[in-house]
Structures are given as C-alpha cells and as structure tokens.
Image 1 (cartoon, rainbow, N blue to C red):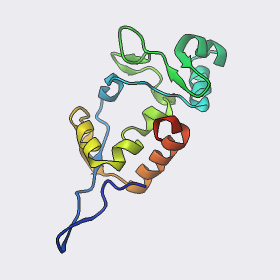
Image 2 (cartoon, one colour):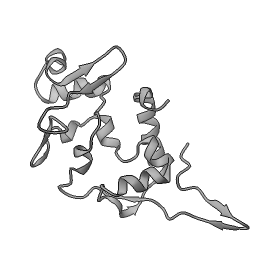
Image 3 (cartoon, one colour):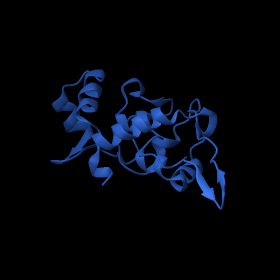
Length: 152
C-alpha cells in the first residue's frame, strides 16, 4: 500500500502533502547511470532477446547473470548498463519492467524520504502533472510481484 502522499495530522488540523509530480526529461539517462542492478523477468529476457535478433540462450550467455532465483543484466566495466549509449537506451522500446516503472518502485513511492533522495539526482521528479497514484500503485505492485527478492 502506498503511504507516501496520504494525509497526516498535526494537532487538530489535517495537512496534505503536495501531490507528487513526475515527467521524464528528454534525453535524460540519470536513472540508467545510478549504481545498482537491472533485474529482468522471464518476459523481459525473451522480449529483449527477440528485439536484438538473438535466441534466449545466446542473450543469456552474453548479457545475463543468473542464479536459481534471479536474473539480472551484467554490468560492463565502462558503464552502468550495457545498453546505455550516448544517444540513450539501445533497447528503449523493449526495456525491462524495472526500467519502465521507474520511479514508481515500492521503496520510492512508499517512503517520502526515498522519493526526495531520488529527486536529488532525477530531474523528472517535481516536473509535469501530478502523478496518478492509482497507476503508480499498480506499477509498484507489478514490480513487487515480479521481483519479490527486492521487497521482503
């Protein structure tokens, strides 16, 4: 459940947080440059392999680190993401669920402090129209279901 922007009370007077705003900024790749891993679902793996004209096995061998319970992109020495190029994401049209749902991940929309910390490097936060929180919750739920190892 998203607690981030609910009404809270100070004394007898209700106070509302401002509605969160987010709009990706043209040409921005700040989220792709942050340290961490990009986890893939089985669907992500197959869709990206198809897009690149590879078999699932060849894609896995070249791009994935895989254990019994997780699948993530390998991190190259020279960059944070193998698919991030100077002009942007090479697989943007088929990017993984984790990338598609940013910044509406459970940890970010559940905790205002995490949202504010992300705003320090993400220029899309506090831009554009107010976020449709129902849609944000749906995306967070999808992330939680797809990657339960991240959200215990």
